[in-house]
Length: 302
Picture 1 (cartoon, rainbow, N blue to C red):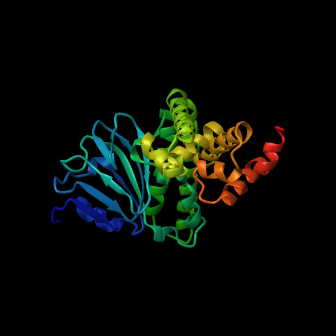
Picture 2 (cartoon, rainbow, N blue to C red):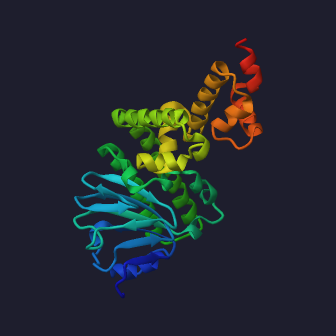
Picture 3 (cartoon, rainbow, N blue to C red):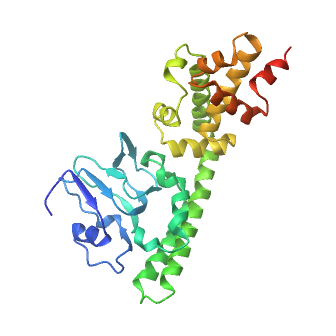
């Protein structure tokens, strides 16, 4: 294979060719051991047209976007088709243990997972937001992977795909459970992040240039905190019961109530002050969140 900085992986057969492995047992789903990975100094990044689930243990680093991550402990990461995985300058990381599960989107066609898989937010998380597993959790995950491997290595029959799809759903359900556990057990780190979100929004809505900047976006907040948008919303949902967008609206309404109750500015002036081009949009949002129009709310203070 000719060396290049970026390699696009379109099939499981291609992965096996690159790594010098025997032909895969199944064309659309496969599991490889990380000890079989071969470093290629010409490959600095890989873009997958597959779903990828990995469990890694080792001492090297991987990079997702601009973030580096130490794989000193066993952890899981998830990639959706089209995402890029970057390694160190010498190619594939060394001294890694674990496995990688590859799922071609065609394998999911006309199954319960074909749509459901898009609802798993962790496929939108970055590598540095990977899932830390306890020994017990890792044993559970490894057991599911072993069953999937045994199934596609056996003589395929009309039940094979259904069995593997069922175990993939179990795998992803456990991942959801373990991520929620992680949000809870890492309280100190997560509480600090929540405090930063709260401070950012408070400062933003009290700023003088809100009229020029408009309302803050989820993307802007996530980028400032160096996390992905989906991870941020999942974390905040677990901690507060609200998504990032809902928290933005909550802070907006707090500021709007303050301006309505302490100033004589018109509703249009307050709407403009809060970054709305049209006062009707502001009034509609305010009523949806408070069950009162801005004028009714103001009248309750007179």
